[in-house]
Length: 299
Image (cartoon, rainbow, N blue to C red; front, top):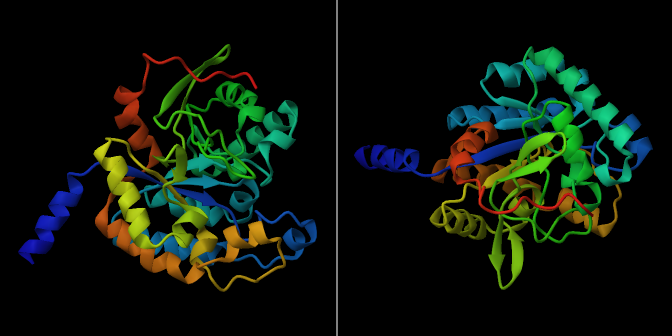
């Protein structure tokens, strides 16, 4: 018993990492419109399991809600907010930002933000793009986020991926200045290995990696004083959601190793300390590299 309490105290003294959730139903990230229209609604299954696990380990996180998911499940939005979690915006339709016009992005983001704020009664100041799709082609979106009142964003993934990524984006939180003001970018975590940025943890990477790789990634970033931005989707805790035909890349990221999610997550929460992204952001503000030039907003 004494050893257990000692481990708990040691865990509490460690760097806090950001626990983030992209709240969407299992079908929202599937491009086929027929599938989206006729799909079984199952958000409450995975989200309920996730909330129970977080409560068990006394962890609070940031939940980025997709607009339609919030509108269809207002009681779930309130349940998450009442549990003390931070609420953010994940956009309206789950589509790539760089395929949208700036006008459409502005209108749909405002629509989603207003819908979520009406349910929580609080302003929404944190944003994450579907598919992490703020890339060099869509950095213009950051200025629109500022105009809409967002204070920080976590949409940039410093990796090279077929669907997203800015490989040379700094790994540390960055203040980005635009003609409309400033916004803080908290990029999704990576670990440089042989001049390649390895995604640290989250989503399909969390399911695909052996737990030892995830553990080593967290420890490596802790040693550098960098908090990990971890992410997960509720449907990753719902292995019984329906299978649909996808190309091999989509199938790999969506369906592989579902049954590993829960045991890995429990171990991660037991071994590392977590907080909402907003709290981690406030703690990291003193570490923002103000002496370095802000990343360019040109393509």
